[in-house]
Image (cartoon, rainbow, N blue to C red; front, side, top):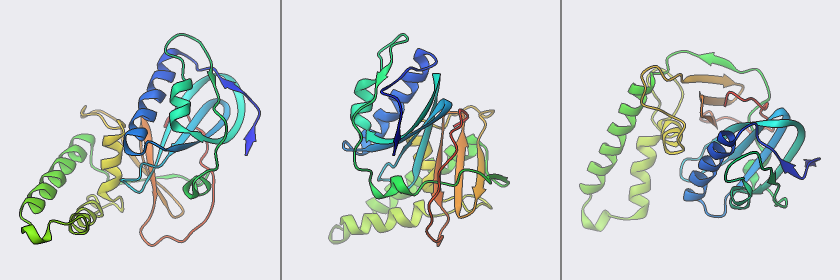
Length: 228
C-alpha cells in the first residue's frame, strides 16, 4: 500500500461528479463496497467489483495535481468525501483491508485491440434480447421450480454467452450498461482489448475487465489512464 497524499483535488467539478455517479452505482449493488485507488501523475484510477456481474469496473478521473497513490478505501466513505461542486479537495478516507479481488488486477501493459466487437447499438440490442429471454424463461418456470438456484442457472446460461465472434461474455456488456459506461449513440466509441488472460471492454466513461474463461491466476496492476 502506497499513500503519499491526504486529499485529492480534481481537475474540475465534472470529474468529481462523474466519479461520484460511478461510486453510487457500485454502492447500489453492494452497500459495503470497497474500491482500490491508484494515482500516477495527474490521473486517478478507481477499481471496483459489482458482485452481480463478476467483473472489475474501472473509472478514471483527471486530477489537478500529480500524485503517487495506491490504497483501498470504502466506496461509501469516498463518495461522502467528494466535493459537491467547485475546486474543493476530497479528503481520503482511512484505508481498509482490501477484498481478495483488489490484489488481482489486470496487467499494466500489453493491451491489443481485438476485432469482432459489435457497435453500441448492437450491444444494447443484445442486452435487451437477453433480459427479455430471462424474463420469459423465468415466467415459464412451474411453481415448484421457482427457486433462486433455478433462476441463477438461467442467468448463468444467458450472461455467459459470448458476443458475436469475440470471447467477451454478455455479462461484461450488462455490467458496462448498468454502471453507466455505455451510450445509445451509434457513434459512441467502444473497443475490446486483450492482454494475457484478460479481456477489457473500454468506453470513454469507463472499462470493464475480466479473466477469460478457464484462465489461470496471476497478479498485476492496470496502468492509470484518463481514457477509461
